[in-house]
Structure formats: C-alpha cells, structure tokens
Length: 174
Image (cartoon, rainbow, N blue to C red; front, top):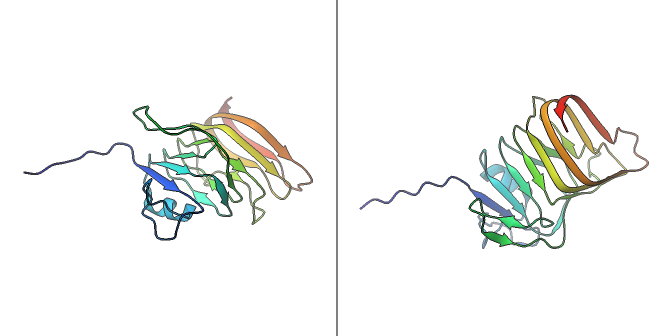
C-alpha cells in the first residue's frame, strides 16, 4: 500500500546554540540562518530560537520569519512555543513578495547594510509586527517599489547613523 502525505505548511527551526549539521526540524535545529534559507521554499515558516545571529537571510515569496518574542503556532493553531526572550539578528533581512516578520530584534548590522531591505523588485503585502529595530551603523528599513505595505514596529531607534533610518518609496498601505 502507498501512503501519500500532502504537506501544505513547512516549518524550519534555527537555534544559534544547536550543533552544526541539524536538519531544521524542531528536534534537530539548524544553527545558521543560511541553512534555513537554503533548505526552505516559498510559503515556508522559519522559526528562530532565542539567541544572537550575526548573519543575514534572504526570504522567498510568502515566507514567515518568526522570532522567540512571539508565540509560535502551527498553521492549524496549536501552540509550538510561547513567547519568551529574544531572537536578535545583526544582519540584513532581504524581502520578497508576501513576507511576514514577527518577534525579531534587529541590532546593528555587521556589514553596515540596511537591516530590512527589498530584493530590488516589487515587495508587496509585507507585514512586520512585534519587531524592534535599533541601529547606529546603517539604515534600519529601506524599501523601494513596495506595493501594499503594512508595518507596525514596537520600537524603531536610530542614533548617529549617516544613512536614512527609514526609507520608503512607491508604496501604499499603512
């Protein structure tokens, strides 16, 4: 007998304290954001455990990037993990279409690049909530040619940065 399993929502897990060589499952987490970036596909969820990640990540269309400062729910609604502590990314999050970012702390980018940036093409239906940006070295949020945009920052701090803290061009939304 053959059994087929249709997986609509794939979830990947990243933990900076995990051993190298994980598979990205909850019990065998990736230790690098780049591992999740490589393994994931459009519309996948990437959950980031508490810790500091001095790395960047390029999101694919429809992906959700969810940090430890957010309660993690399966698409079915059951709780995976309750909100606690923080997931800090000191790198750039590059956006695609229909991305969601929740529960992330963005610190100073190690490469003095914008902390959240578009992919050079149209980024639409972007949702960012429960996310804090604090920078002294780079742009915090640089988006051009966005389309629909829905962003709520809990806090956004930029001090002594020569670059624009917040740059948005060609967009609609709130």
